[in-house]
Length: 318
Ligand code: FUB
Image 1 (cartoon, helix red, strand yellow):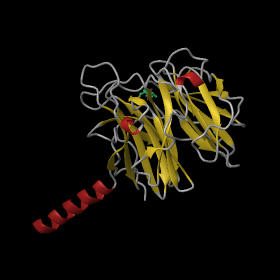
Image 2 (cartoon, protein in one colour; image 1 turned 90 degrees about the horizontal axis):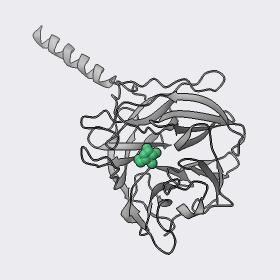
Image 3 (tube, protein in one colour; image 1 turned 30 degrees about the horizontal axis):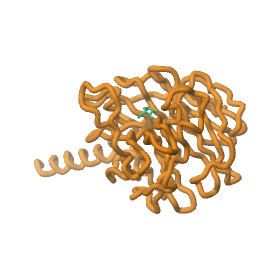
Image 4 (cartoon, helix red, strand yellow; image 1 turned 180 degrees about the horizontal axis):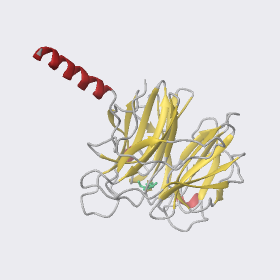
């Protein structure tokens, strides 16, 4: 009888483990920020920044970008640092927000980072592109120079207004890059994904601070972004990628223990997911952040429901 009870207990434990939620934050052994999820080959790849500032230091110390993967949204495999600012010979550091995008079997990693003060730029935040044949890297500098320097946009006078790239390819094959802090900027990309195709345009979505994330759903373009300070996540929609954009409201209130948050949105195995960061790990804070994921739900008219931030996170999917 005792043996039978033991078997039942072990079986119940295994079943409960199999059904366990992800538990936010989903990455607990290092501090991560600026999540950028990518769905490829029945797998979610999650690219993150890496906060390494010491406790009590109020500035970013972000040396590299990391990549994790999952097939069930709960068990995350750590593939380590896949790209560092050292790979860009023209950079002086600062591995700020980034997004990896797959096209024609290649993985293009758009990153924001500091430019050295040299013949090309006086410094400030720039955007570079790295490329790999694998979603987990290794990545190498795809151009050998910045795609966008601070001098190429002049509407904002601060030197970090070229943060936070997000990339999107429309149904007609035209690729776009959006980015920005203080104002949102965008440009077409050539098919090679490493050259701008035409002028840079600028606009100001209501309350826009930074961290745009662009995608299309049922013919509607969604521009989700960090707004205000401390940051909320708000969004606008449009029927053309060139706008006009209609403001649709707040979907995330300020997060716990971090003055920034940062959206990353995917559909995977029939559900929509919202990635963000907060500062809730022990010793965490605004410069020691942690990536989380919760469900994202749409109303029947395509508007996004307010995100419910949870400690338990999402359930496993098969
Ligand atoms: O991680 C550094 C910066 O903080 C990012 O570039 C912004 O989006 C904010 O999350």
